[in-house]
Each structure stands twice: as structure tokens, then as C-alpha cells.
Image 1: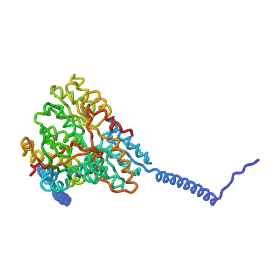
Image 2 (image 1 turned 90 degrees about the vertical axis):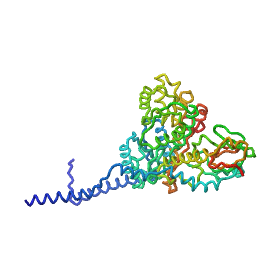
Image 3 (image 1 turned 60 degrees about the horizontal axis):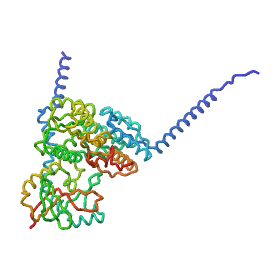
Image 4 (image 1 turned 180 degrees about the horizontal axis):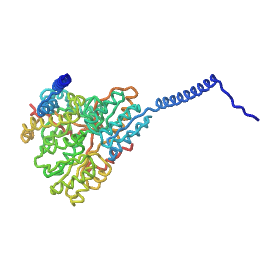
Length: 204
Length: 331
């Protein structure tokens, strides 16, 4: 009889301990919780586009400063390098006349022997992310997150900027463009500059 | 002549025993000093590589070990055989043996974190090469190919060559490796924008040439009318090409790889493969060894991640490249 009471008591104690040790919840709830902890590249890119991008474009160099840096071999002073690469990145601002338009580019004559090729179709590079002083690779948990930010920024360029522009209407007009460029770090002459735009406006 | 056996007193016996003991201790001490001197003179670096079954990783591992030796270290290469538990064993042995630094090519972005943390706990710096682990604080630094950027370039070239339309297949690498997804995401960030490009199959072949050949053979049975195949590495591109060759479709289906391996560079030059992304395993291996050396000299200022740019190699520019690097890279 004593043993029966003793064993029953142990069973009850064990049951209580096990009950309070295990937390059971539906798998879907748990999965959604871990999803919410995941990085949201779209949200990050949106925040960057609306809040941080102006800080980057404010530092955009003009063509004269860029040409000067290239000639003086001071590109590193006005640009950013990401990791180990032969390329540097910077934001550039320029004005010029639209001289031609094709499927992929708007060609803009700047008046000092430099033609700007403004990308309008193949917006897939990471030039904006790489040129940005606000986006640091060190802040991301994985390099995938860092890359997905670039993809989302490009999507914003396509949707928020390029879809709003009627390219054909720009022909012959003077425009003002700001965008990110990639330059080989040993470049000595700038003739054709391919630019990934973040802003295209009619010159007032 | 009569020899008389010498009788020793207890005191004498004790004295001889002690002398022997002292001699043994001196010998041990001498060995310990030699060992100590050896470890002071030649510290060691371990090179732990995910697999030596792929020439690309052989180049990565051997270059890292070579560079470590050049910098004055004793270097040993460990092959994890794409097996995380094998990798864990190597870490245990390396930590127990008192290596000074680890140059590491992980098998799994998540599964390898605990190994790196164990080394970190033992105050052994770990430098990841080429493959990433999903923890930005565990390794001292990670030197990684910009797989995403490289595959964006391949994607653009792919889209232009197919005139923005057609059916294609994607063969993925190891699903646990971030490079697999960075390459796939980079490629899809381009091709998915073009609605007339249709992916008819996407399968994994674990970065393995033979598996890729089998996968491609079975895909071709269900989809005989494909225009192109994008593979997550060069070994799989060669496997896919072999399957296409056997099916008599090598002339009509474009093959794209990623790595810059010897046979693919050769195949691009011969017009068999369309393009690949040139990674620089020698550069990454050398940088890792140099950084480990700097760490052991007291430097602690390292970026958590260092991406290494990837170049597009096509039939138009293949003469500028050689296996695993640029044509003018003679190091």
C-alpha cells in the first residue's frame, strides 16, 4: 500500500515536471515566428530608396570632379570599392542633351567629349548598392541578404523611376541625371560612361 | 681469474635508480624543449577543405597550404569529403593538436557554424574561403566569391544570347551551400524579368559532374526541346554537356557554367560551352593565408566578409583567361 502511494506520487511529480517542461504549439505558428525574424530585403530597399538614397546622391560627384580624379589617379578619394575587385563605384550627377535613344539606353551628350549611356532596360547590376555609403556589407547576416537588397533596389529603379518616364519624349531635350557608375580602377580616360540611374529629370 | 659478483647495498641501489630516473627526466625535458622550440619556430596552419574530389577545391586547398608554407608555417590539408561530421572530426583534431590558425572551406553554411565556434572558443582564428557560414561573428573573416554578381553577368549574357526567349534548365549545386543560392538568385534576378524565358526544370546535382550528367539525361527525356542549361558550377556544366553530346544536342543547346575550371575554359575556347564565371581560388586562398598570418602577428582589424569580384568568360574574351585566373596571372 505504501509503495503504491509512493509510486503514484512519483508519477504525479514526473507528469507535472514534464507538463511544465514542454511547450507545444502548432508548427505553422512556429514557422511564421521564424519567418518574421527573417530579413526582409524589400522593406530594407524601400527604406533605403525613400530615406537613405538622398544622403548618397547628395555626395554625387559631377563630371569635372570625376575627370579630375581619373587624371590625378585619385579615384579612391571619390569612390568606394567593395571587397577585392578591379572596380570602384560612385554616384555621378550630370546634365546633357539627349542625342539618341534605343532599347537599352538613353544617350546623353554632356558637352565635354563624354557620352553618358543611361541604362533603361538591363538594370541588374549592383552599382547603386556598391556605390552607397549607407549600405555596409558588414551589417547583413549573410551575403544573400546583401545581394537581395541589390535586386530590390533594381526593382525600384524599374518600377518607381523608369516606368514613369516616356523615353521618346526625352529626345532632343536637356536632362539632369543622377546615378551610380562602375569604373575600372586603372581607367585613365572617360569617354563613354554607363550609368545606372536613380533620378532622371528634365533640366529646368 | 675469479669474478666476484658485486653486491650492492640498498643505499647504492637507491642511488642508481635515482640516477636512472634523473637521466630519463633529462631526456624527456630535452625532447620537450625540442618540441617547444619546434612549435615556436614553426607554427601551424590547418587547411580544411570541403572536398578534394573537385579540381577547383584542390587548387584552393593546395594554394592556401603553399602560401602558408611560404609564410613560414607548417601546413596540413584536411579533406571533409562534403561531410559535416567528417569536418567536425577535423576541427576536433586540429584544436587538440594546437594548430595556430584554420583556413577553412565549409561544407555547409549552417552545419559548419558550430565547428567554427569551437575553434573560436579555443582561440584559433578561422578564415573562411569561398564558401560562407551563416554567422557573421564566428569566423575571423570570410573571403567569398561574389557569386551573385558573377551570375548576374552570366544571366545578362544568357538573355542576350537567347534573344530574351526560350526554354531552359537550371542545375543547382549543394542546397546547404549559400553559393548555390547566391548563384541561382543572381541568375534569376535577370532571367525572371523576361517572361518569354521559361524554366522547364530545376534540379540539384550537388556540384557533381556525374550526377549532373544523370540529371541532364532524365530532364532531356521529358524536355527534348530546351535551348539552354545554366549550371551552378563548371563540373556540372561538363556533366550536362556530356549528356547533351550523347543525346546529339550539344550543338543546339547552350551550356553555361560557373567557376573557371580548366576543362570549361578549354571547352569555351573550343566553342562547346557558352560562358562561365571566373572565380579566383588562388587569390582567395592566398589572401586567407596572408590574413591568418597578419592575425598571428597581432593584427585584429578584419572585415567580417570580403567579396571577390567574378568575371564573365565568354567565347569572345576567353583568351584573357586561363584555368582559375587571368591569362597574365603567372603566380
